[in-house]
Image (cartoon, rainbow, N blue to C red; front, side, top):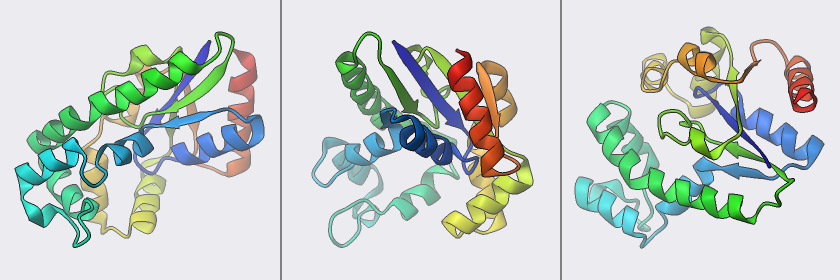
Length: 194
């Protein structure tokens, strides 16, 4: 069984890598972000705990989570980020474990886990690929994609483990600082060298 853990910093291109692995190689992609979203669906126990902690203002008028408002809270306060992680990470881990149990013994799957190290989920994968890029590129991608100011984007970058530390702990680094062709070439080499 080959379980490839994809991680990296915000805005480094993790989704670009997983999209390519799915499209080009037809590998199943299990995404922690999707599982985290399902953890806070309307009426879920986790959403109720979030509402109890922050009040009704954390919800949209339709009862769904106001992700922007929650982001403002957790990205500026380490204690709140840790509290939220303690609610969501066990749910996400369980989702991955269910998928792994269903995978054939000779199968390959990709686990997209942005907080792979922080959430202590490295035991779920057989190898770790970090997607990285230079700081200016990362900052510009976040500001453009999420419509954030430079200060807000920097706050999100600093809220995560450093890319240098992730690279040091990983089996392979995919440098996404140049262009998509170069990134795809790195992915192809890594997938077939193992």
